[in-house]
Image (cartoon, rainbow, N blue to C red):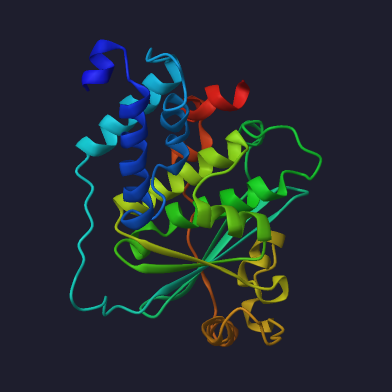
Length: 270
């Protein structure tokens, strides 16, 4: 707050602040705000203490987040609730998002959404049908649609896209549009008390692959032994023996509105 009022932040103060925030987001809040650390690290290497527009926007974001009072409780006893499994997938042409959730309490739930042209224009131009961006957006779709079932739970996210799997673990990306999705996903995770774990699943064993291609006959899945984990094997077998229930899709404006994508935009447009 003092730096914002004075309009100056020395390199030493920036270095200490970045170090403390980096430890906090890595050790406590599992990558919340990693995409908002770069301007502070940059300030620690500058010869001038003057606060630029990008650093000012970042500091204002951190002030807002710290005032939210987000806190995690570390219990002596482990969470007694079993984890829930969120399978996410996307199709490139035509673009379609899908997410399938398995919970011991409600069984198999799924949702699907065709992104609008306005949503697709938020991504940088690429020659891959925006498949990685769509895969990330399918994770956002699952987090929003099944927010009630995911709140306060351990959530295993199964992805068959290597890029989105690895980048989601890091919590940030070089591309602005992808970093914006990570930024909001980890913020949502912290606010809703989720504990996210990201894992790889083979495409043939990704349950969400069916609704992303408008195929809803879940009972006819072909099971091949996935290498991801025994837990994934059990989930796939459970899915084979039940009918999935459709849940209307929900996607928060943080993921689909151009106005809310501006807070990280300046860096990636330079």
